[in-house]
Image 1 (cartoon, helix red, strand yellow):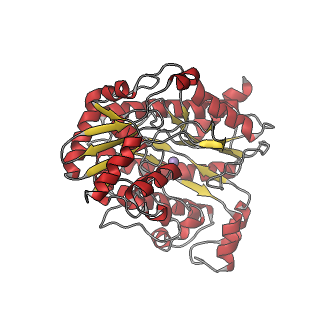
Image 2 (image 1 turned 90 degrees about the vertical axis):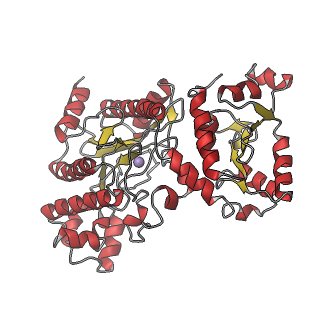
Image 3 (image 1 turned 30 degrees about the horizontal axis):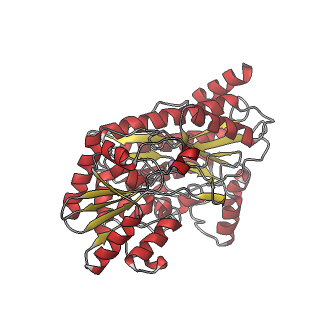
Length: 470
Ligand SMILES: [Mn+2]
């Protein structure tokens, strides 16, 4: 086959657990089809649906599966290649050959899926499906189940969502091995950026090096990379600026390895060989927030509390710089830290870079008891719940100096007990700093996925000095 899978038993076991949990009805898991870019046959790179991959492992388009939770029967639906198809694709394994590698003995043409589901609707059987995010799948489900396209999301099965989250959240050893591989490649993407960058280059030249490192390692990108001198813009995909001495480059990028597991790392380094004093001061604050947060990782700890620790350390740091004032705990409670730290501290990571985000944050990152905050800043925290062994997640604190936000809060007299707006003016053009690593929660604490990147000021300056002098 043209893709790698885990041992057959891995998939059989996952489906057995799912079937037992759901108990009754049909479980529909849609694979993805090729997605057209500008005309039908010019496609975006293919990405299989992560839940389909998790239970059926087949990394090719045009497949779907149904598990009958009552009878236990499992069927993979897909069309065999015709000779005319083979002219373009070459010979490929048949649907039944592929299905047998993941322990499924029954296959059927794709058209049979619609018939099966329409009959199930007529027979008033429960059909469990997850919220589709691809228009093709949304439209097919709407037609088969006779519901409006806009209502498909609401009709998704909460028991199925919860059952899947209850499995995919706990990474198996075979998955952790893949996470390590993806994170190692991701680390090499960052090392390449740190070594390659020279003042005078365009951001896109560094971005190209980052992407090259992924592709040269038989990986792709787990998301569109950020390589920017404007690190304060959280999702800055523009990469056309010239990099100048005295600036910092923020690089947020990760690999998706050949099994589709994701890495997601961020480094911030100087364009030249040294941080300025001001940059170094803020970098140390971010790094301290990071290290103290990582040290908290262990089963039972609410990730929300780890986030609050990072917020508190950032506020303490900002007080030491004179841009904040007052009691750090009260400042965090008032949300004043969000002047500098507007996003969350991290998220689950696995087959998706924001793992299982399609299933819904309330189920993945929160619980029925612990709801997401609505406060600016904390409302962007994707993960709040208590950590458990087998979770894999990112830790990524940052300080982002956003002039428009400074102006808005100042005009509103917001958090004036905690923010020294006059001192803050000197940071208008500072940009932003983030560091990010990926961790596994173990029985007793945590383990870094992949390998350690240069992270302290000395380590980062050393790699920059070596690179610039070579
Ligand atoms: Mn991340």
